[in-house]
Image (tube, rainbow, N blue to C red; front, side):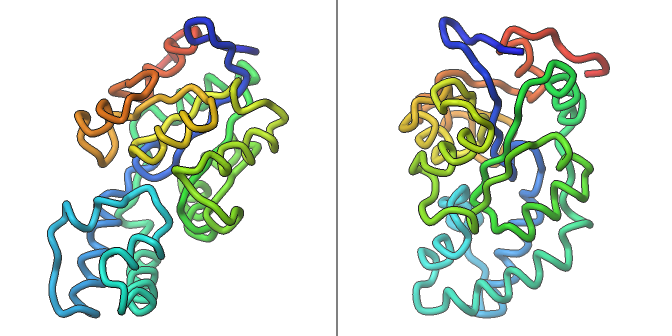
Length: 225
């Protein structure tokens, strides 16, 4: 079943993962704080740690401390893996919305800058992997958001043109990638970035809850949300 946003026909829906489907902000922050304290001997401001969120972790750590990126990565990953199931959670309404799209036969995919092992762990942990015909992680592509290639790759796996997809994400990098590839960009205002930052990035649409997405695409609001 096709949706429609204004005059745009939508044949598939793509989602970012962290900050869009899964609430991992506490997990990410505690992992950053732990890694910087262990490796650098200090904790850095949260705003500084999160400024490049939405890009591959290794690149974020190179920006934080170029000479210590590899050690930071090792410590971060160990802490993140140890505390993932304790601190991560799925955003309210996510399952109901994904159920609705699945009932309608709308193809769905995930495009994330997260590495494959932890991305799939999160999807499986919360029982939502089954909804997605395509999952593109940082390990699956050689270029990353804000380049549109990861989105285009996911669209190809779903058998649709990127211009006929919606991409929902909570970072300016997500919005930029969607815009560069010609997809409809939807800012997820419930994620880690301030709403004003996302609005300034110029998304086609902005929603305050994932529960608003079916109506935005011309589908009824799912039951139970």
